[in-house]
Image (cartoon, rainbow, N blue to C red; front, side, top):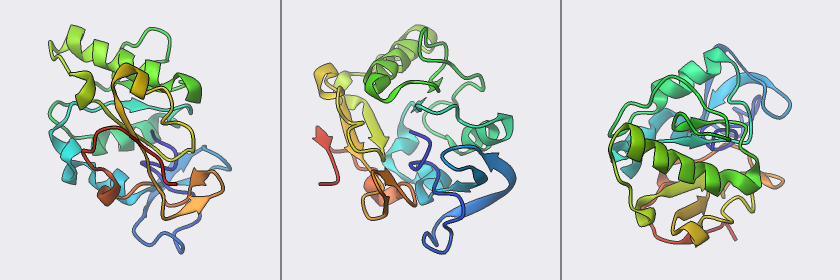
Length: 180
């Protein structure tokens, strides 16, 4: 997920001292403002995901070209992701935006299929991990044999994350885990 997972709430740096503003880059999510990378957004490569084939699934649009470029530059795993983005219908990239919350597990399945067809990499369902701040977005992943974990548990802004995810929340644990 992007909004409030790889990013934090715009204008909340005082509440989220580990986050980092990206000057000159607008993030239109929620109320909009200057893009803010969460602690995870700055350091995804320091987690076990640094050895993974990465993908993004977001209900939002992922911002404009400048925000997408920042996200692409911070997504470093076992393989460099392409620089084109996909919608949720026919997945043509592991970077998927516009995927409604109830459909996120299906979009993740499209990313797994993309890696199989385009990079000749078979990813076992038990090795698929999804992280999202929104309560309820872990639903649907278990039926596919995938793992899903709610993040930004220590900082909340209603039902969504406030500061976004931290590297410590990105753990290689099997199953479905929610904040509470």
